[in-house]
Length: 314
Image (cartoon, rainbow, N blue to C red; front, side, top):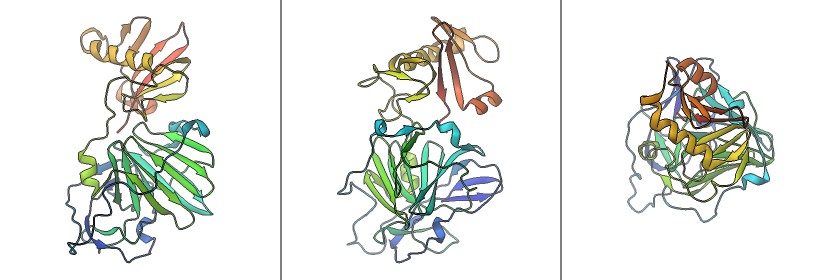
């Protein structure tokens, strides 16, 4: 559950306590707050309720596969959605607004859970129907959202964006789809109904315990030429490499970041650990500059007009 307290947007993890009978959208409403926000986790537990015969609807794979083809939509630079230390956007579904927030390697979107999904209990609040769904590389989990500053930028029809560990697309006027390596969800229509496919965990705590960093190692798809701005590795399980300028392969972009990581502590100079990696000049920006660029490493090859960044994912 996202909740603004003392200037922090906090993920409050709840206990599943039984089947939901609430159709209220109050738990899914995003409340206005202008404080700076970052997402943190708190530890709780989850259960499947008092009925031992009730199956766990938050595990396994749904009957309908959910996803989208990135090549069919217009990519929007994720930096457009930066605000208050997180990334956020809203979509309009059949005239109704839904919002999504990205932090700590996971994207969380507001919607309405099916009545078969157990209520979430976050003391001292009474049990209530999940009002949002969270997604990272490992899978998805139902949660609650409260008091997050409203998203300022819209993801419009036919557009998509990548957060590195997950990607979201407004596939048509009535549907938002977000996907990762192991799960996906759709939020549809004016009621903002949530559907899932892939691995869905019993709790956000269990989901976040899996970790959300893409695995390192290169395989299919990395030898294709890409034109910046483009995020490499987002949907393939590789390390992330953001091609900011120029045209190159994802494999080369990932490789130069790997090579810099291997030498920066021994060969890097100055407070930014600047080092030469072949024809590339790489550095680790200062904290303020890193926040501005949303990158922990910047590599440039001026002769070829190339720039690659290792993006901030948390």
